[in-house]
Length: 476
Ligand SMILES: Nc1ncnc2c1ncn2[C@@H]1O[C@H](COP(=O)(O)OP(=O)(O)O[C@H]2O[C@H](CO)[C@@H](O)[C@H](O)[C@H]2O)[C@@H](O)[C@H]1O
Image (cartoon, rainbow, N blue to C red; front, side, top):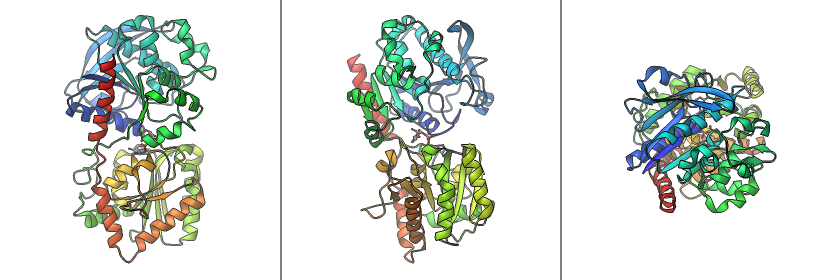
């Protein structure tokens, strides 16, 4: 079975968030399970591109509407990621140092999708499945079934995995001319609310739609950033598959980014050493419980609530708790956090930016990880926290609800709250601090030990995806 994952991100080549983690891990586990999984992504000029040995496997030209672009497909020579990696290079569009946020992102990702399909169209054989991820690759299922020049790929099953339905990649019909020609009777498949909507088109045209957790799929039927009715209409082909984590990359026993390595049996001393080093680095008192936040500083993650959450908790729990924030995003949230820090600098530190290695050290050195998300399709941070013996404090939403059981319930190992509201988050923080201060420290240690042994690896999810592919290839 040959499966082509098409994605805008893949760790460690280029990662902005969880999409990169998933596409960097799932194909590796699928490959190990006997499926010939490959990844195709843009050839951004990241460190990976500059430092790995690559060879050109395809060179051609393509039209983006009336504009002609030359493109190359590079292959990473030594299979260092555990699967074949192909980088689509469209000079002038995709040779950027970053992934998103350019004025011409629509053109960039259109070019990526067209070049990818043009290339696959030239192969002597057809792949068994094309697996797209998020809206950046959402037009591929439509083009495969309706684009004139891709008629050869009409019978190749396509799958779209939705990592986040908030982002849909809409653009106006005035830019339809950028698309390769297609059966105009089918134009309605591209449309949602009067615009070309790549995510909606993918939900309509892909053979199977997956979301990254079962509970997130349930939420989509009622609240999906405008796509609720479409999800309900296409309900029959939707399935929620819970993300896993790459337990080889995220392993406190071997993680080279940590101050000290540890496993469930050396957890107490191991975590303590990491906490001491982290607190020293950020000027915080290591004897207090440390609650951290890692992520994009956007409303979806509840990051705008952080300044008030931190301010109120420090008022209610005077001198009993510390906070550490790592993230970047909304400039106003970044500014508010910096301002808050000025008032409470003994109890809060903030790192604005992106740092993979710091994130690992925070997962290991913190006592609790806070996720006040308004929307969380799956969430990987809580899974990393569990693996590193850090207790997650999460809102009961999306995949967080699927993966975290409250300490009040049988075999619970996390703290859950219902509302993305300051008072409710502060109540949860109060519970966390009590747990930490509890004289019977054994309870916290027991929870940590238990959570480190939970299995969130990709093994079972990789198999669930293989089952989806099999059901489609038998149909094709
Ligand atoms: N400033 C920073 N420095 C270092 N590392 C940082 C960082 N900001 C974020 N990260 C890292 O990025 C990843 C974030 O993953 P998430 O799953 O939480 O979020 P994201 O919203 O991007 O993903 C979307 O896709 C994923 C994958 O399907 C879903 O789990 C999720 O719910 C959905 O919103 C983690 O590896 C985290 O450590």
